[in-house]
Length: 91
Image (cartoon, rainbow, N blue to C red; front, side):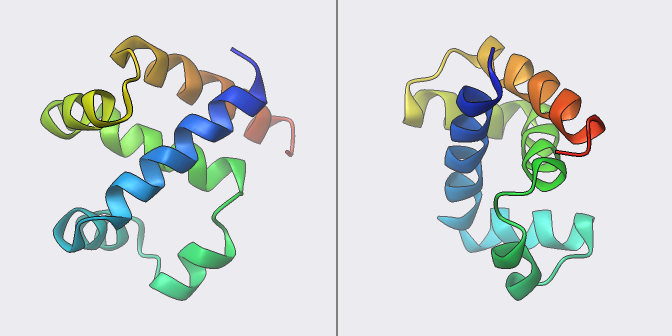
């Protein structure tokens, strides 16, 4: 998977989290980010990887996200790996 595809999936995942106050609140609490910081870093590969990692650790949310956005669940793991590689390159 190329970085652009991974970024699109991660941005969709971020929108999925943002669509529900409880999901977003849990993510923010776990990361220590505030809403303003989240908006400022929304395209950062580290943050996008964290969004996907969060979903990968919550199977029920992962499956709802995958169904809502019509994404094969295994692509989410591939997108995470691609973003981790990008983030590791300083991207």
